[in-house]
Length: 102
Image (tube, rainbow, N blue to C red):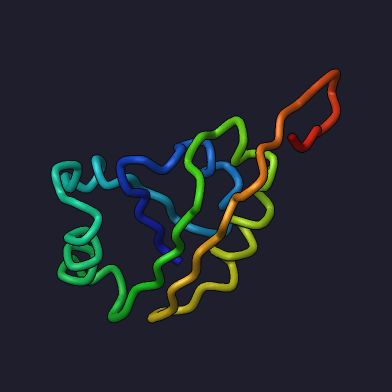
C-alpha cells in the first residue's frame, strides 16, 4: 500500500512500515494542504481508487514509539475505504531501560 504522511506525522514511523511505500505530504508538494484537503489530493493523484485513513491519536515520537506495533498493525490491516483511529492514551516513558506508565 502507498502511504502519505501528513505534516505532523513523526517520520521515524516510516522505518516500521517496510511492506509499504511511504512518502510525506511535503515530498508530494502538498505541504500547504490542510488535513481535510489531503485525502482529496491523494485521490486526484490516483494513488488508489479509494484510500484508507489511519489517524494516530498522539504524535509525539517518544511516546508513540512505545506503541508503534499498534500503529503498524492498524496500517497493515487497513483496506481501501477504511478509517481507523489508533488511540495512544497512556503517558508512557522509559526509566532505567524499562517502560513506565504514569
